Image (cartoon, rainbow, N blue to C red; front, side, top):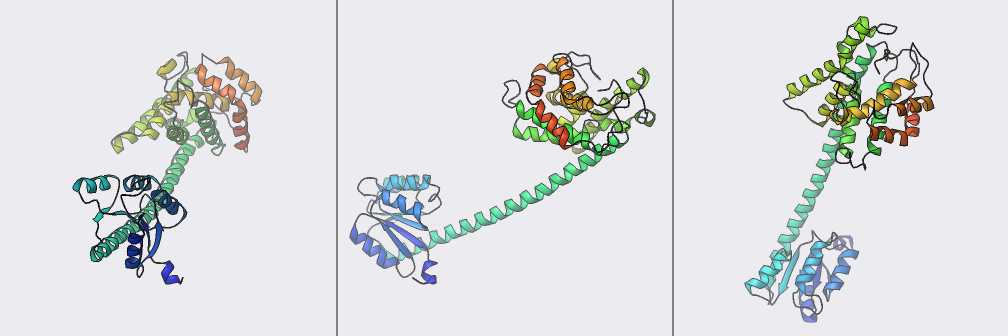
Length: 379
């Protein structure tokens, strides 16, 4: 068989009558490569094992009839897009309707009219070739869209990180950390969320998509610090009570900044909602003693409760002007003491279950230089 023959469309003839097979093969052999099956089961085996471009199918066959064979061909991914043309002596309208309901592309009746057979076969082969070409073009377009979407997502993430880092660099606490505080807290929150995915309280909210949005929104948790007075942000020591009250306003400033973005675009989305919740409420405490609104319990958004655990842990293990960094074990013990007072008990339990992962994240994104620190009492 030469290359020209192998490139020809392949037609599978499914018929239990030898004379019909001989006639169809002789009519089609000059333009097409033909294969033969004498029953439905054999036809199903052939389409699984080899390339077929079109199927000519009889209705009345022993065992599995043509209608059932067609239904199974359409259910099989290997042959679902292969056009099936019924070629049968059953010529009643209800017979044709049954064939089309089974998934056939066309219905021809015997005796065979060669010109009609040639025309219908050629038409359905062209339609299939056009459909395959369209699928290939759609796949290429989808790939291009995914590539462009990935580029836009990367640009978005880079922009958010740049904004968050600018806010951090104005703060004497975190200005020399080159974004590692942000990276650590992002990964802490994602790890906590994944741990809680199967928890009945959180499963509906912590989908894979939402965890990705949470991860992306964490860098903006302290964006409100960009609006704080430099005298407070750059103070090298502990804040006094009046200064601390002013510093608390960064949570409100952060919320308002993100609200302005939502108003500008005419609505919100998952990313902005999480970012606004975290910026405004991650300093709230489970018992209602936090700020800025003194929210308690589940009135605190879930995103902010996750961030509270991540932020406090990172503050404990980081160097401060007024203290050396706590060890991981010491930080875990302090965090445990805050179960039910500072932290949502179930979220804190999840932290305790994966505290080794927090240590690994902290080591991976350790600060190159532990110089600056958090203001006392803020975290």
